[in-house]
Length: 223
Picture: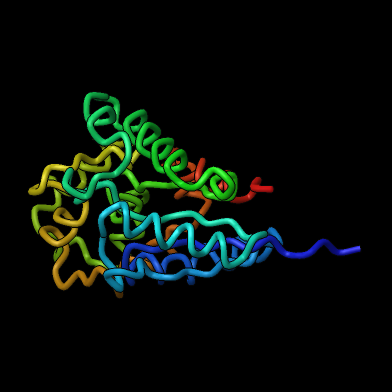
């Protein structure tokens, strides 16, 4: 007897993340008997919002469907302190960025209503979605000729310095998205981001990006 599909809402920060979920994650999860829906952050229609607004959307979805799970696909990079995400000050004292994300995610989970939080799977992308696109230089080279990649040797060195592309730092001038815009002529985030991720494939993305891989495992194993 076939079991009913698990249902998961992935709240996406913006259209790039939504397209990535639709093109890359949804086919993967369907094979795992998991149905996913991908609403944008409601208050902004895309774009990070204060925790109180995101929390309201999370709890509304959990109340609306009492057997579904809710998770998030939002960038850590760009969240300001004034948005008051739980455990923010404690997390900022932690130098290890993966541990910092874990502190924030635990704080988010614990701040959701107690009767709902067991179905909430918080996830913050370290540092931003575009970090995933640095998983395979060959995919980028197949879409952008080397002759059109500005300062190619510097670009190539990024891949050597960061075996785990999630760790590419979050300084405003050198965040993953800023690097792509600098090096790749005519790079369009919304159009090219999901395409590059799709061509890279989940196998390589999961192998290279450890937190991202753990998030997918958490969704697969939710019950």
